[in-house]
Image (cartoon, rainbow, N blue to C red; front, side):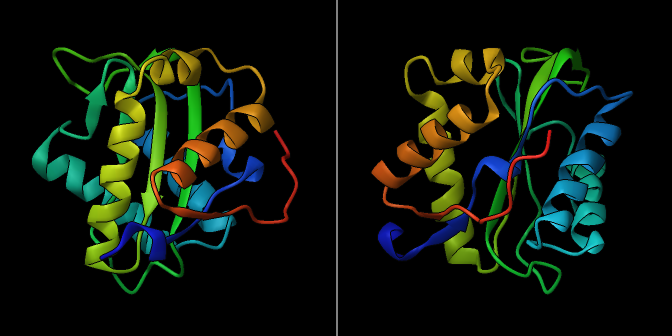
Length: 168
């Protein structure tokens, strides 16, 4: 799959900063609810994200303070989408090295080939100098969304910012 042919819905309305979560399940539920409210998935996708972590453990905690939550493509994904939520107090996902998680990046992807392409692009983004610090210290959702969208576009992902305004 050529990355430039992969589209991802992501914009300011897909970012929520300064949230609280009682547990990793609560944090994943919040990411899933935002994916649902943005039209990317149905509630079934959120259940599948939770099941993946319950089955395989906290492997989705991919960097210090950052979890990249997702499930395999399925009929409960309406379109490719991403969300970012921050939890300043941190959430314990059970990862020995990278807890507490202060940012959850949730993704939903329709097709397996696009799934690999988008996860790889986000992983490269997170591996870039300063990206994690910027993510964890963000105070402006619009600026964070613009910066992430620009970096994904540089990686060849066609980012489509939905029109819905940022609400929190």
